[in-house]
Length: 256
Image (cartoon, rainbow, N blue to C red):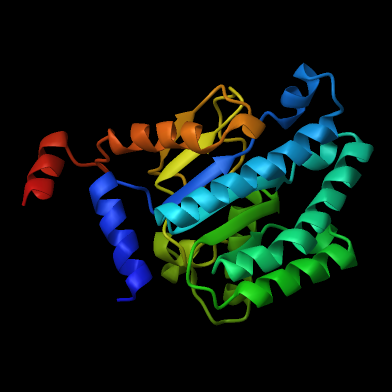
C-alpha cells in the first residue's frame, strides 16, 4: 500500500470520509441574477468554486469527485448560453489541466462526446492522456451526460455482444450490466450533494446512486466553498449506512 493510500485510509477511518462524492453544481444563474450580472458570470464564478472543492478533496484524501458539469438536457438552454458554456469548458481545460497534473489529479470525462466540436474533443483526449497515470484524486467531469444515456449505452453494448455471439442473454445480471457503465471501475458514490435548493437527482448517475447518501443545500454553487462542504461531510459522518441490514446488525459489525 502506498503512503498516499495509507494517509487517505487513516483520514477516512477517523473522520468517516466518503470515498466518492458526486455533486450537482446548481445555482450559477441565480447567483449572477442576485448580483444583476449576466448568467455567464455565474458560470465563471462556478468554475472558481469547483477549483476550491477539487483542492479540498485532494487535501482531505477523498478518492473520487464526480461533478455534473453539463447534462444531456442542458442543450435545451438558450443557444448563446450553451455556446458560452462550451467555450468556458474549453478554456478551463487549457488553463487548468497542467495544474491538475502537477497536483497528481487524474481527470476523466464521461458522457456522449459526439456533440462536441473537434477542438473540444481533442482537448478532452489530451487532458485525459496527460493525467491518466496520476495516483491522487480522480476528478470525473460529467459533460453531455445523463443517467438514462449511461444505462442505454450499456444496454446497447450488451446487445451488440449478444448479436455477435460473444454473450448470451442468460449471462446478463446486475454485475454484467454494471461492467458496461461509465464509472464501472470506480467505487459507487457514498455522498451525493446538490446545491441551489432543488431536491432531485435530475438524471445524474441513476444506476450508481442506488445506495448513496443524499444531501441537499440551499447554498448556490458559487458560494459552496470549504465550510459548506465540511457541513455536508459532517452530515454524512453522522448517518448510518445499512445497505438493507438492520441498525443493530450494522452496530454489531462495526463493533466487531
